[in-house]
Structures are given as structure tokens and as C-alpha cells.
Image 1 (cartoon, rainbow, N blue to C red):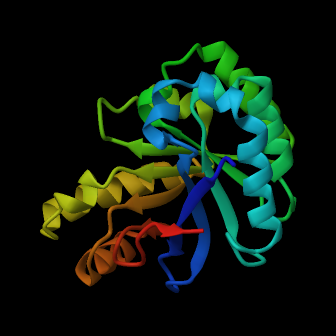
Image 2 (cartoon, rainbow, N blue to C red):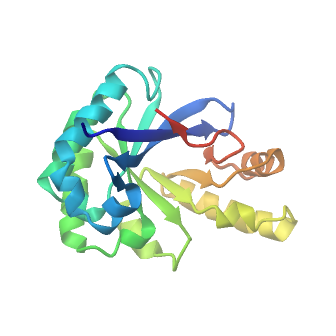
Length: 220
């Protein structure tokens, strides 16, 4: 017996507060935690079939999302460029009308550029979309983001948590949102934990929000 536990967290349309999609997070596979998988990417390859069979079954049974909602999954570059990463995407790309969205954290963008770029290009050609996660949590790499042209960018929670709503801070965040919109990239702001923060997101024109105000990670 090899129990696999996933959780999901909603991503909300800032305009109407409806669920746009869910980010799916691996919590445990047998005795292995998410932290173990992040530290040892080879574990993903070793347990790939069980992980993806479970996740696909949950999605087919509509236990992750309803019809019309999007699915966000996190992959490390080493996982993404492996053959198992490709088969993961193929297994989960169930409906071309609602593309699978692959999340890669900003700090992992330094992986072999050409190898990662080629793999992402291949996946996007096959109907997937790309999201850069945790943008701004470290030294922001605008050049790398521009190179990848992601469909979505998830601004790290520090942007909203440190913003007190004053004009100067609000305007800075709005300019950043406008910058990404000028590239054709949708903006998701993470870490929204209050109605005040949600209203700020709406005022600056960000597309989507994620945070405890709308829901905690929920076991599937």
C-alpha cells in the first residue's frame, strides 16, 4: 500500500470572486513528504507512475476541479525536462479548452536555459501554459521572465503583505501589474488574507488572487 495525498488551493478571479482554477500540491506519498521530493527530484521519476495515475483519477472524477476550471501543477526543472515530466503533462492535459498550467518558481529559472526553454516550448506547442511562481521572493530576474513569456505570473505574497495601501506603495504595485499586462501576461497575487487586501488587488487591476482569504489548502 502506497497512499498518496494531494491538496488543492483555489485561484480566484479578482473581478467576480469565482474560482478560476486550483493549484494542486503533493503532500505525501507513502512516507515521503513534499520536502523530500523537492530535495531529491529523482524521487519524482521513481514514483512517477503512481503519482500521475492518482492525480489523473482524481481529476477525471471531478474531485480537483469542476468543468471549466483550470489545473495548476508545480514541477521542478529537473522533473520537467525528464521523460516523466512530459508524460505527466500528456496524462493531465485532458481538455484542450482548459489548458494545463505548469508552475515553475522564479528561483528555479537558472536551470540550463536552452534545455528548459526547448522543453517549455514543446509543451506550450502541445497546448500547455506556463506560470512563473513566487516572482519577487528573491532577486527578480526580469530578463529571464521576458525570455520565457509566461502566460501567468504569480507575485510573491511579500508584495501584498508589505503593502499598507498608501498611494505610493499601491502605485508601485499597479505599475508592476501594468508592466506584465503589457507583455500579455496575466497576474496572480499570492498571499491575500483579508478583504482589504482583496480590494487592493481589484483596484490595481490584477487578474487573479490566491490566499487564505479565499481558502486554505484542502485535502483531496
